Each structure stands twice: as C-alpha cells, then as structure tokens.
Length: 145
Image (cartoon, rainbow, N blue to C red; front, top):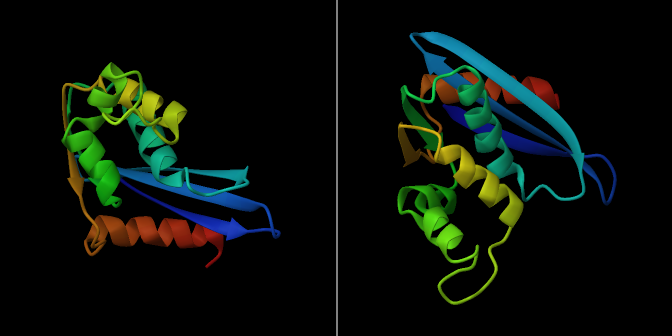
C-alpha cells in the first residue's frame, strides 16, 4: 500500500485536503481518493494510511502479507518501533508525560494496526518506483496540478 496527500489553498484560512492510497495486489491496482475541507493540513499523513488500512480491512485482506510504504519517517518509526503501543499503554502520553499530538488519529491507527496479522511498514521517502509514479499522477489529477 502506498499513499500520498496534498493540500489546495482555497482561502487564507481554509484548504481542501486531498489524499489517495494505492494498493497493489496480484498485479492489480486499487486506488481510493478523498477530498475534505480542512482548516489545517497537518493531519493528512495519518488520514492517508488510516483510510488505506480501513479499505484493506473492508476487503478482508487483514490476514494477507501487507507492506505499507510510509513517506514520513517519524510515522514509520512510531509504527515500526512500537511507539504507538507504548503510548497506548501509557494513557496516550509519552514516557515524559506529554500528551500525544493528533491523539484521536493515533488511537484509530493503533486500533487498525492491531487487526492485521502480518503488516510491515517501511519508510520510503524516495517515491521513485512505478507505484509512486502512478499515485503521483492520480494525486495531480485530483488537485489539478
């Protein structure tokens, strides 16, 4: 699963957020995109992966081997290194006692991750393979860029 996002400035204080995810299974491409009016676009990185995982569950693929390509290093680390689980066990606070940012989305993400048998997350910042090219094309069409 690959995902990407963008934000289109509509006015000084509002934007339209666009995110899309692409699933490749047995050489078949599945993609879903979403647009939403937002005041801030800092939640997009989570919405893309959450919607993608939701779709994988809807398709009943939670028992398949899933490889999620994550563009944001800190999010990949939070999943791969078990930070989400640690935060959940600590009342959604860091070990220093600070509240986790975007807590409702982090909780939703952890709940989804718990439902997969074999999910691997990789930080993949390069976007240089065919899947990312296809994803970028879809995103550009959605944002008219």
